[in-house]
Structure formats: structure tokens, C-alpha cells
Length: 244
Image (cartoon, rainbow, N blue to C red; front, side, top):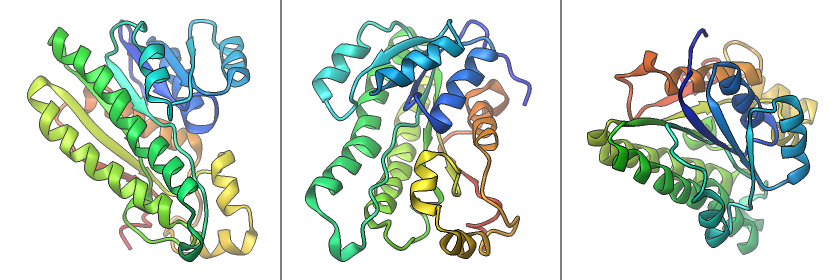
């Protein structure tokens, strides 16, 4: 998709790998000044080597205090992509408190905090903005061994709708993208088994998993002025999985 983000400042969480990394690079390519946030310094180092204009921020988003300190000096942000996530796969009867807490801390609580920090600045400047939260088809469809992950993404979808409701009057749009399986490192963790992958692909009318670029293009669309009247939506990027 052709889009220009010249003059815009964008913050992307989980920018070290996968969808987040590709989104950060795409935004920079489209002219945005990008702040890339992740917890692994080596990933940030390689990202900056690939695109020197990106500003790296290394912080563990599960640490509320450290996150506030790390982000308080990044300056104004026009575009936010909450992509950081973790997927701890456990059967429901084997869910453990530590994995439960970690998943909600990264997938939901961190989105609340980062979005608060960014949206307060957007509101104060009166310039509006766009926030895209990276959710999943798992928010709307039960998947075996994904009890906690499904719950976090369902929570993220509703959180995003409330954000859209409350931030809309300040011209801040909030939407989610809800991909099917994307073969990032996290995607391979859950779907590397050929038989398991086959069972999922058989339920996708297009018969394949999503490419990272296809998700990134959807994120760029929702961030851009081309979607200026789209607010509070969950956009499936799933080849028709949820439609069937």
C-alpha cells in the first residue's frame, strides 16, 4: 500500500522481531520517525544496523515503573502500534499462575500503560492520532492449548473498543488487526507441527497462513489517513477463517 508518514512520529512495541520489526521498518521506509521498543538489546542493535534512523528503546514492558521512565523522554508520538505479545501455550487444566500473569501483563496491561502515555500527549497537543493494537483471530475463536492467549486477545479487543469510544472525541482512532497464524518465531512456536498446521489451514478458505507483509500492510492502512473514518474495528487478516 502506498502511504506517506512524512513528518509523523511512530512508536512500535515488540519491534525486535516478527510483525513489530517489519512494521517499524515499513514506517521508517514511509517517512516516519520511528521509536522501536523491545526488551532485547541485541534485537534493537540489529534493527538500528538495518535502519539507522530508528530510535531504540530497550525496556521490559511488564515493569510498569521502568516503562514509564523509558518512554517519558521519547517526545510526541502521532502513531502507536502495540504489538508486543507473548504466547504461553498450556492446556486449560495445566494453566499456571506465573504464565497467566505474564501473558496478561504483556498482552493487556502493557497496552494500557503505553497507550495511556501516548494518548495523553496526543490529547494535550490536540492533534489527534492513530493507535493500532495487534490482536489475533484467537480473540474470537477458541483454540486448543491457547486458553490464556485467547483470553488476553479477547480482552485486548474490548479494551480497544473502549479506547476508541473514549479517545475518539479527541480525534484519536483506535483499531485492532486480528491475524490468523503468521509464521514469525511466535507463530512457529504454536504451529510448527505439520499435522496441527494442516488442521488450521483446512479451516482457512484461502488455504494458507498469513505473510508478515500482509499484516503490516493492514496496520499501515489503519494508521494512515486513508482510514480516517475507521475507529473501533477489529480487522481480521485471516484468509476468511472467522467468516466461516
